[in-house]
Length: 146
Image (tube, rainbow, N blue to C red; front, side, top):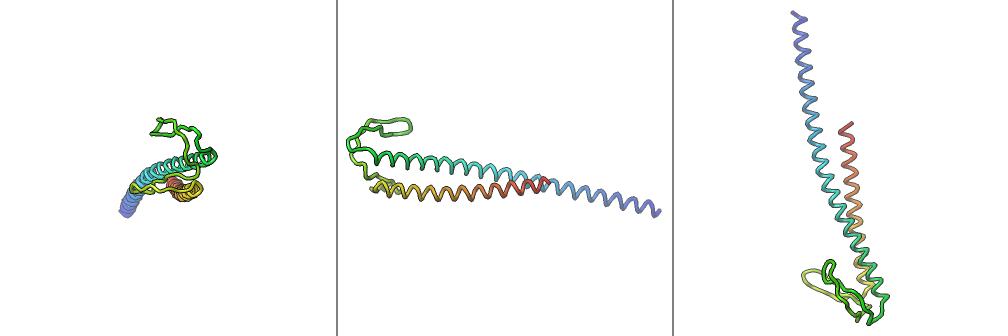
């Protein structure tokens, strides 16, 4: 009788351990799914940051080239993506900058470049912070899988 009771307790304990283990596995699976979703979102942010950084670098390069041109030089001015017109350069010292809310201000090219470099620095910092978060998530995922 005592042996049968001990066997029942052992079976009950084993069943409870299996249930706890199954619950733990489900929690890990759920956490891994959440990490995957967050990782995908962070990777999308990184792509946007990379695009913005490339665009800023292209603009800075174009501004440097523009300042090297002479008044009266002919150039292609973009009207929209992939559409250009021939234009004559009247001013190679200043550019017009949209500062938001439909407001355009005139800035010397070096000031415009400084503004863009400041934006580049901010975006690079956001990118770095996002990369650190992504690495932290990946480390957490590895710990869950171990």
